[in-house]
Image (cartoon, rainbow, N blue to C red; front, side, top):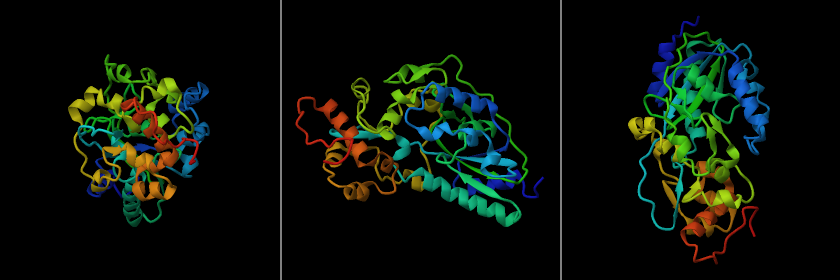
Length: 325
């Protein structure tokens, strides 16, 4: 067992910006592997081909030989919605400020530095969601919360408005126990989904999910689903907004980088559609999660929202989602 205690690590993590922290053994996750296998077998991962090589996601030692523990941190990102101005499209809460990958990585690097200063012989591997680790599963094992029927991690302190990051380490640390929370008979998240992407408790079909369609999907969005996008130009919070845990526990985020507005709660559709070059797009959204959709994807989304808001004006000079003119 390490001389550096779990409580020291947790205390330091909280002091540098983490809102939650828990520790779990770096063991294989056969249950998570089977769920992911069935998800992929059913094709519900859509075009996210990187999920198909999923062994590393459930075998921490493949990411860090000699792995003994996983430190999981959570970062609250909730912001209160304002009324949507006319001619604007809504931005999902997680994407309104600085790219969370950078914010969480900064915290994890500081935490890893603290660990290695105290334990020079240790090794650490930093993971955010772009790294192959089934992070929600390990967050549950680390005692941060439980998985809701909409497949999000629900925490007692903040509901599901939480971003995750991890450090896999060779240190053997005292670990936390999973929580006993659950959704009970509530199905509000499933009932609220505009595109019926939630097929049942814990069953998400990304091919129908507005978050996937407006961020990861390339090319045109099928008309039947595009008609359900509403005012959402990047991402979707609908199932989270319906969740009783969030209604009771969500509280405004305190991390300055997360709440520093780049995209903000909404963005002008005209501003998006008037962007003629990728440099225009970069200048406006650099450092924001909106970079993930690229100019073509965001303009596709803005076109859908604009047509919904002003169906009597079909003559917008729209740019195809397949690329610039």
